Image (tube, rainbow, N blue to C red; front, top):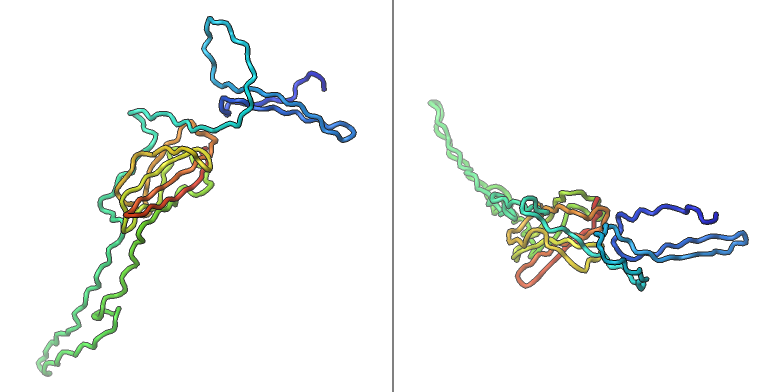
Length: 238
């Protein structure tokens, strides 16, 4: 075709930056011909001014660097929701001692029979009622950092409830952050750093805005006495 319509391109979901369009054609003898043109995407409508329009100059080609654009939350509608700590839910279960039952049997005398002496209790082995206490539950590790929801590669939509475990015998504090892409260069704190341990519960609530169709990474960092652990998951924002 000559000087005709080749195709349409929707640029609404792209960043405002330089892009390259390439047209490839194959001749009858199998040769490939191509043509390229560099364009700059501008989704925002510029405000007209009275000054003369400067002549557009071609910008040097550069590698686009994605930036994380998260709007500033307003006082009336925060973009995250902090989990309410449950005062009645301890971070781990305390071992409960096994009560020793009373094996002494009180005889009931009858008019025709003399009272029967109480039976002598037989000592029981460890772990049995009346013997030594059973095995102590496995204690919590020094430090645990895990995200159980959302899982790796999941498609999420706001609001996002981030669940997992941030606890341990050496636990001090934890924080949840979000970054753009599978290997973020910058991290944004969700809510604030917290000093209350969480075991298989809500770590934070996040309300993403302006990130539709983007890949983001959630990071949980747990600090302990003399050590630190972290967990990450990468998700798609619907």
